[in-house]
Structures are given as C-alpha cells and as structure tokens.
Amino acid sequence: MVTMATRPRTSSPVPFPSLGKVFDVLSDDSRLAIVRLLLDGELRTAGQIAELVELPASTCSYHLSKLLSAGITVCQTEGTHRLPVLRRAELEEHFPGLLDLIRHGATV
Image 1 (cartoon, helix red, strand yellow):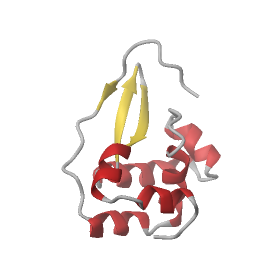
Image 2 (tube, rainbow, N blue to C red):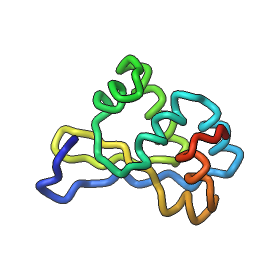
Image 3 (tube, rainbow, N blue to C red):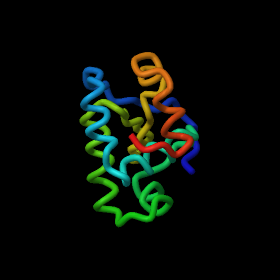
Image 4 (spheres, rainbow, N blue to C red):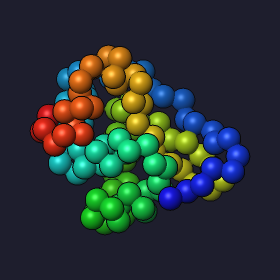
C-alpha cells in the first residue's frame, strides 16, 4: 500500500468509453480481476497489483495500459509511483450497477 503524504497528480482521463468498449476491455478475466481489486479504493503500484492478481508484472502492465487507454482508469502519480485508480463515479453514472456486477463476480 502506498501512503499519500502529498496531494497526488492524476492523469487527464480519455473521453468516456462507450458501453461496447467497456465490455470489450472487461471481457478479459485478468482485467476483470484487476478492476475487482481496484474497487476497494486502495492505492497500489502495478507491481503490487500484479502480485495480488497473480500475474507476471509485464502482463499486468499490459492489462493496466488497456484499462487506462479505454478510459476505465486514470493514473495518480505520487513521486515516482503511478497508481491506477478506477473512474468509479463516471462508471456508476454512465453504467449504473456495472461495478456491483463486477464486485459480486458476475462476468461481463
């Protein structure tokens, strides 16, 4: 877990994705596992996420990049750490109930 001593910088989100794009990106089990993990709101580095979802670091980075480029996440930067964060409020606003389905293990 990364502690936040100073206010982190957050990347500018890409335009919000369509439902089709969200489903396309979340159709991968590894990306679903990452999103489930990010739902708890804890800030983690890519290495920590990789360890928790049991993926090689390079594979996890690839999936994190897909989530970021699809607009599902943004990156907060604290020092040299890049910390993926779900765009939770926007996802809930555009696709009500989607995060609950993911949280409870439904496949998208």
